[in-house]
Image 1 (cartoon, helix red, strand yellow):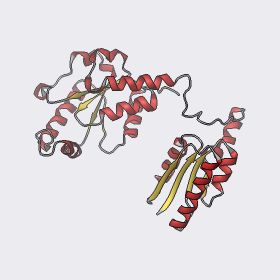
Image 2 (cartoon, helix red, strand yellow):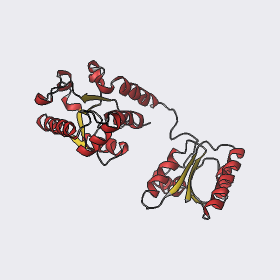
Image 3 (cartoon, rainbow, N blue to C red):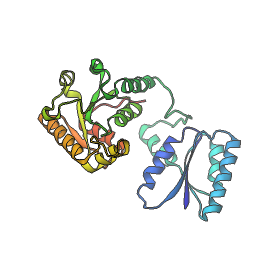
Image 4 (tube, helix red, strand yellow):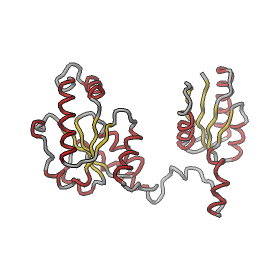
Length: 269
């Protein structure tokens, strides 16, 4: 199996995101290795040994997606026997021409702590404090409130929106404590109707997820999953709550679809 490296003298998040996005278009299996903070000659020497070892083991040169500020370290890495891809360098010249400003590379600038970083920290704390409807008295501060039956992805999506975009996302679970025969929103949510967004799943997928937690329970039964989903989707439509079926989407895709549908403004870090 061929190896793909994601290497940087910073976090390697940019190299990893670019590499994964590009490689996702190709139906091949790869051995992925992310190597962040390669910021000394000694570390670069160690990475070179790994690249050469991968070349020897795989019989093919590894793919190297990299973003380096330090040119000496970059030169060392790209001359170790792999095939290098530098996303930033490829587009830097064109952007410089358009902006009429020379690029000033700086390690950790993309993901470091700068003046708007507190947006992210505050949003993460808010998501944790307002998970599973813990504090309905704090909903005035929410940018969005995710609703749905148990195990439809509300918590991970809330946290991703906070971590990635600085959006304060609360979530409220519709559970067995609610009267599904006469399902309605609590008063606190009705007052925030304009912030509500629903998540739902296919019945089979919800059954599988719940069975992983409580195998053979009424909670995980196909009948109960079907009933809850039918009733909550009726509620969404009756209350004009926008919603998506997240069965075939990753957390990243769910978050992106929510932003597209709600026009929520992303915080810029």
